Image 1 (cartoon, helix red, strand yellow):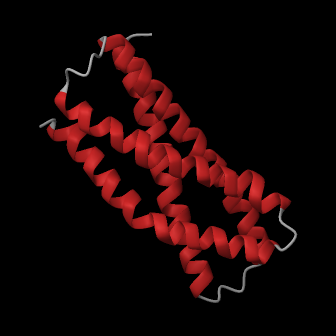
Image 2 (image 1 turned 30 degrees about the horizontal axis):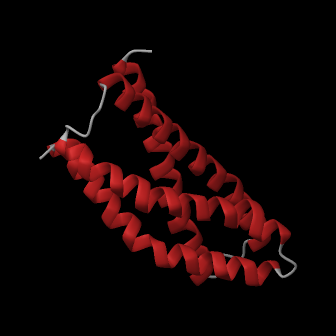
Length: 146
């Protein structure tokens, strides 16, 4: 696979990841604070399914990103990537691993689903700002390439 094809799939993964995580997060915030008369259990199950789509997008973006580094024969010689990679590997990756754990292990095995969902909501509230700032930094680095 050539570099531009890998970049295409990398961007598809980024779009899946960002679009699903941001829109679903806003949707759940709205649903938690506004009485929508919807069955929250149905919404939560849909949210869990879509969160797995978000994680799949992240994995695709990460895999294609590493493949592009391989194609570039990257040796820590591209300054903007030297700043972008720690954000991805030290901020985004651990948060997505925790997200996967919440959605696929903790919540399904929890006896008290409502309590589990409240903890997951708290997790989402806490990580929202760091994800936003980290995401903007990565976009800046990828576009401006300082």
